[in-house]
Every structure is written in structure tokens, then in C-alpha cells.
Image (cartoon, rainbow, N blue to C red):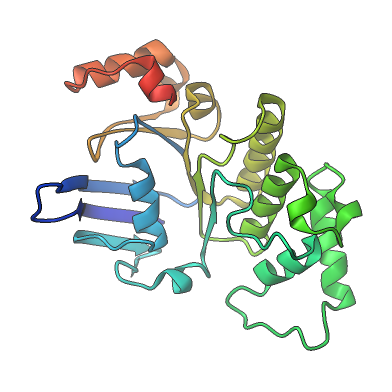
Length: 262
């Protein structure tokens, strides 16, 4: 279970450029919740993921993972139970290292690293079988440098790296935004398959409203550092882009569909 209580994040505090990025935000997610997060630029979406990941600390409030206070836990320690993907497929991987070497790094996360004798046969077989589940032929490129892979292959690898040791929490920061439409659908389907199979509590930032309402079981709508709506169940199933725009208008924001869609 992931819980945020009264989280406040202020950038450039006590200056002319002060910006409240998160404004008393509270959120409680059950194990296995797959939540899409939508909102215009500056709504606080990435800040929300950053404060969960530990990239930045909250100025006020608390964060709990499975009832353990992680509010000020170092980012590298959270990496043991938090997986994360970014818009850039190469972020979080080593482009000059091979597919199997990158997977080994991810697999050893939190366990200590030992490359003295290279990657053992057992781990190699595990990596090959894991790549096969992606269905994109990555198992045939285990010794290829990651920087030579296509964007879709790199992002699929990053997804596998983030989940090869099943995390408590998976954070997806517009992880399909840099991909072409066909590849984006493939990566979204892979994401959905992995998240549902392993019941990973997941937050996914997206500007694609269709994806936001199609995947997962909840959609969070953010504006000005606050959650203005949590959509789920029958209400969510009946929503469309027009309904999302109405939520913004009702909250007092003047916003266009272009702003929401990025």
C-alpha cells in the first residue's frame, strides 16, 4: 500500500519565483492499483512521481510504503522497491553495455554487484526467458549494445529492467511519449501485461487521455498541485475527453484539450 499524506512541495521558496508544485496532496493506493495521472503542464504530475521516488523531498507531509515511513528515505534505497521508466528510452540504462549486462545490473539492484566472473549461466537463461515474454525478439540480441536498439526495443528493455525484481511501486513518466503510435501501443500492452500479472502498484503519467481511461483501474486528474478528481469504476468507464475538460472547467481552470494532450 502506498500512502501520501498532506504532501507539499515548494520550489524557489521565499523568492519572487516561488512555485507551489504540490499543495497539500493526499493519496492512498492499494496493492496492485494501476493509476493513470493526467493534467496540464505544471499541474504537478512529475513532481508527484519525483517525491515518491525520492528525487526530491517533500517540504511538508509524509509518505508511507506498506505502512513504513519513507518520507526522507534516500532515493537509492527506495530503488530497491521502486521501479521507474522515463520518456527517454535510454534514461536508466547504459547505452554502451549489452542487453544482458543491463539486465544483470537491474537484477543485482539492492543485492550488491559482483562482475568478477561475469554473468553466470543461470542468470543468462533467466534474462533470455524474460526477454522472450516481451515478444519482440530481444532474446536474440542479448550481446548487442543497448544504444544500437530501436526506441521500442530500448523502452521494452527498460520496462523489463524496472520489473525483473518485482517492485512494490512502478512509476511511469510518459514512457511511451517518444515512440511512434504503433510502438506505443505495443509498449502499453506489455506494460499492462506485466503490471496485472505481478499486481504492481503503478502510477503512469500520460497526455494520452484514451490510454489514461483505457488502462488500469483509476485515473487521477491534477491541476495546480492538487488532485481535482479520482475516477474509477462505472464513473471512469463512461468518461471521455470532453468529460475530462469539464472537470478542469469546473475546478476554475481555463484549459484546452491541446493543453491536456500536451
